[in-house]
Image 1: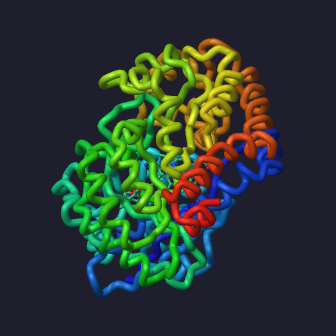
Image 2: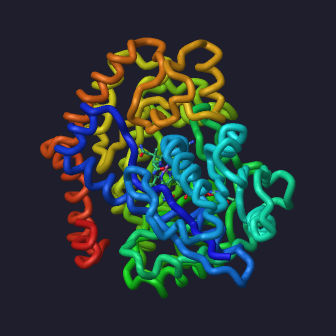
Length: 450
Ligand code: B12
């Protein structure tokens, strides 16, 4: 069979005013453009576990959700879904099936809403895809349609033996950013988090040697790639993390990852991350004030417990030449309209090199979604296209939806203005060059980061 893997890339947001603001802010635009073009790691894993004898192709839908004409030459097309683009994905699937192409769909959204996906696709795939995909391909080859495939009915995915994602399928595409996973899951359970709704297993790490093997495979496709680790929380296990960094040092690759604030607790780890050329860590701070974080992490109240020392922890990370992208969620239940100024003050005080602000978003499958639905606070349930992290579709507890929107605009204008970006970043560069003057950081390294 000819099998197509169709990624729905790009960034989604519908709030017109915010889009206008974003377009005038180089800080926002630059990051969006960079990430919008990331290839889909999930699909590259599916390609890697496809049995030999099939012809495989990787495709991208355009930012408006339209598919390239080549997908119509396939016998089977695999589509990966996030909530914000799932209606576009269903529309693509309807068109493909109308033309006689079989469609399989998986990913975060259909995992929690399989009954919806059944209306549009031949094979609905729930959970991690590596074990179930070969069975889907076999069934498709026999012409069997209208099936639901659940990872829970297959052996658990073994993180000790993941294959190399088929990066080679991207060889003729202009990607320079590549994704690698070092781990899956997160030990914490934040009530809003949509990342791990489909993972049946606890936090799992991969063997460092396998991660390095995958990075070498990328180097065969691209000379100087930038690496994004597509993890939920990379440095949970500090000893393993140090081992990873030691092995990364000789590769001299620049990389980005998501982790929690406990990286700052371990000086040796920070030094190794710096030596391994970590360029940025993204950390979910969620709120500048501790009281708003009470109860947000459901297992151990982790976010609230770590809030008091957060500013110093963030400074420690940045003092190691690693920029922090601090993420805040606006509109948590205990947020009053004061939160917008508080975030600005926090970001300037640390100061944070990068800041990401999003609005609280009830993604289906999360405890937050169920709670807000029960409380009658979701404005338009199932308007999935609003699950973008930038569009308000719920009633906050201590402000109106409009106050939340206005606050988001107010903060966007300030945080991402040229003056504020410069002010936030200046301290980082000053520290870096001081370290250079003290002989701690090489000139080449400083220049590369600047
Ligand atoms: C990388 C990334 C992106 C990349 C995606 C690149 C791409 N083309 O795939 C970019 C930057 C484009 C992106 C965009 C967006 N993202 Co994003 N992104 C991520 C991130 C950090 C990692 C995803 C990843 O690669 N995981 C690793 C792979 C291996 O897992 P996977 O994709 O889930 O695939 C596995 C299974 O799902 C399954 N599977 C997946 N697809 C299929 C298909 C079939 C047929 C089968 C059988 C199985 C299967 O098998 C795979 C292997 O086990 C996650 C956070 C996270 N840690 O998950 C957020 C995340 C997925 N993003 C999110 C959001 C909200 C967005 C945006 C809406 C933001 C915005 N406003 O634009 C857009 C979506 C727009 C769009 N085009 O879809 C949310 C999604 C929540 C949800 N329920 O939808 C997440 C969870 C972040 C968060 N915490 O809120 N994102």
